[in-house]
Image 1 (cartoon, rainbow over the protein chains, first blue to last red):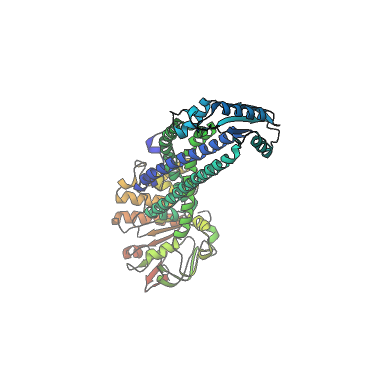
Image 2: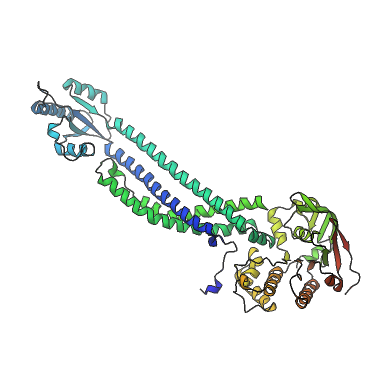
Length: 302
Length: 234
């Protein structure tokens, strides 16, 4: 298109220093927004993962038997584990039972005790992973009593007990992240509001001319909406460009800690799609905020 | 100018005991006058007598602090923002300092009143190009107004004021910053617009102009306004 035919806006928000300030500020907000949004979605995925992992399973633990010298009696312990295994296999509603080997326990303990641990010589309980039939109800009290009769060293570890604590923690974390998200959006709205108000004062002469020639407030507000929409969109792109590598790095770092707990904190395809759509969200958000700010301000101004 | 006939039986502008001013201080008080459709009126008075204030009220950018102002039969005190804008679309204004949007081109400045009315770009282009030829600025179509001379700016300002074929044309000291030859040309243009039906109101302190063109005159003095009829027909 011929340069001469490019129609300029009557209100020149984009030529002002404030627009550069808005680009920088909005890009930072969008960066924060995208990172926190990813965090919210990752926490959500992590909680879902926890729930899926433990629904339909319980763990029975058998503490090691000690001899008179307070040393672990491996043979006695093994005997008790076998008794518990047999008992659990016959409980109604149990699908399968298997004893976790030292390697599996070592893997579970790594996040807390590090890589170089000798499970065999540590007073770590033997663990039995019990898979339950989904459609059958389990009487946990009966199992607890049965195990106690068998050996006082055996106890049932219902995952729900500690999962509830984890869920509460994750819920708090999610609420915090959501609060940050809302805060970022609110601050962003305030920034647009004050920037648009400042711009209205800067352009008061042009606005008066537009009013004199019969422009409706809607006409002027749409000019602002167009300019701020552009700022919103490009800020969204810039924010996204910096946020995506950050999310990938944080994600890799989280997984590299080796924590089984964090391994579920991954973004789904839908999550990534939502993140990629943030410049569009930013565009409409900036447009709508600027439009209503200008409409309301004009009604008060003249 | 299609609606002008509507106002033949009643004044196009009617002021009843109107006061107007700034920051709670009235500059003009108890102004009572009526202008009929198709009339040509000078607004005269010394500097600071309130010519610009009166005009800004008449082109509906200021509201009277007291009294009743009727424009096109609408009581402005009870007209909402939306309708006020619609009324302003039937008015053209030429300012002494032109008040063009300097960052826009000649074309975009002239097209402005049509764009705010939502006219399609094809029709806008046709009308603007026609007017640009008339003001002999068709070679400066895409020049930014910031690069124009004073005389060119004035022609653009006049083109912008008349492009939507207004029912009323206000001009605030239009001959104030031009030489006598251009002033004469401008006056002939205003008379011609008036001849085709536009109500013209010109604020001026140029006594030579008011004596040469014998139209009715609103004289502002001592905070009030008095309408003097034309002495003879020209």
